[in-house]
Image 1 (cartoon, rainbow, N blue to C red):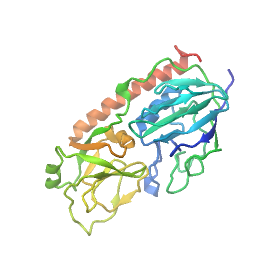
Image 2: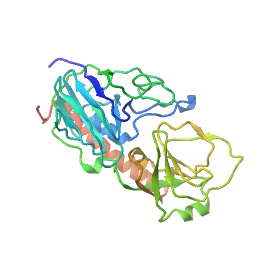
Image 3: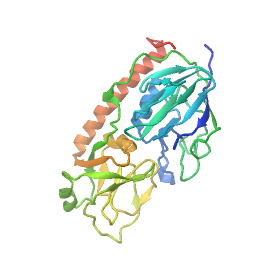
Image 4: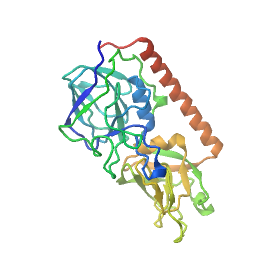
Length: 325
């Protein structure tokens, strides 16, 4: 079969659908990280369709888009359990699916979690800005004109041989948990006070409606240290800011590069993908862990993800057992 590039026509954009990839490494130049809010879902969706270089994909939020496919394509949808259909029939998550021209994919809604990634074999063909194709909604650059998708948009993909999708499905152990209850492993920073650390065990917080790609505010209070002279310092996705009202803010990929609020906790890297699935109303607790424990958990997650990716890459290199449409 000759090489072709996917072409997706947006019939309905969904609530918030953006182009994302692995994000920018230019925070020192003032660029927020951006990138997929659930990077595990992004990696697995890309691996399922045979993408190996972090090719751009679509991130869908709460209510996904309706898309008409105009060229042979292989798609994979990973993340929260969206009720997706292809020409009115159920579209499976966590596996690659061959799609014919003229078919319509409707991503629908999810009862739990918040986001999913729709990967296209070959990746989406959008310009790179500061080393990434990701959409920065606040800055208005990257992705599809620096904005969320609109009805009538047509997204093209890089030309690639469609191939036969692998038969396998990503096992639940490799997926990001989607709640509604979350326990986030956190590391204390130099700004963590003894009073705050004593208050954490058993304390439950609720995700408030103020939740977007910049940050998630939690209902529930922690002892906040007053420091009006604190300088604005660099921040990272996963940082837990504590404003004077004591209600924590979890920073996500679109957060600014600096902030003036104290940051007494940082979410362990292994749990950062869970931040992208926090949905208003979810419950959140914090578990303080050591740096060694955080590294061990991240290492175990990385070995699992690499194992899945290597197996899928082998399939696409060799044309192993697959599912024919």
